[in-house]
Image (cartoon, rainbow, N blue to C red; front, side):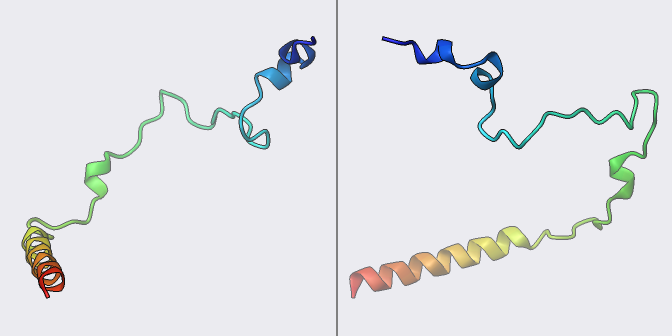
Length: 73
């Protein structure tokens, strides 16, 4: 009996699931380069989106009521 793993070359044995993808390292940036702080670039205003939890609660309650009506009748 032939051991199938021994018939493959080392490159085939370690091949990734998608052989078209190659591991690459981005060498355009180095550790000594500084960038901007991500928090300085945000555009969200204070209290923006504060109403979403209330909206989700109302929608959830409405869906539960609709489901109960469907199952009961």
